[in-house]
Image 1 (cartoon, rainbow, N blue to C red):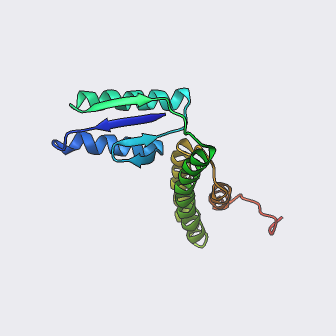
Image 2: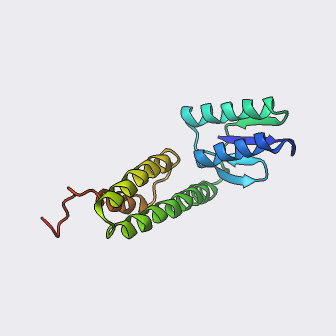
Amino acid sequence: MLLSYRMPREPSTPRITVWRKLKRLGVAQLGDGLVALPADARTREHLDWIADEILEAGGSAMVWLAQPTGAGQERQLAQAMADARATEYTAVLTEAEQAKTAPEPERLRVMRRLRAELRRIHRRDYFPPPQRTSAEHAVSALHPDHVTEETA
């Protein structure tokens, strides 16, 4: 799915709101005012809603069902989206590893926050990278009842 859009520069609030929503969806930025998501009913609905919001803000928007002309382009786009999520998972993993030595109340607070962050990342993770599993395990290991092979 492609969303092609233009928005007025002023006021900036609607433009920033749309940008944040697109970022939360995990779009691939193909160009200025052109973003892509894998085609399914959920992503189409999200892009349709954002297009309506853009139109209400005085901009122009069109949602397209598109297909790359080559498998290489499709793989490149999927890899770019996976790389973006890998970066997010690596940040979660790093923070979970740093929290391992924290006192239990702090460790549990970090664990809850990182679990919520993982849920947010999962919603925009269309092509899961290997870092996903590592981050999930690192966050689970913060729980005091977590059993590892070393402690079993």
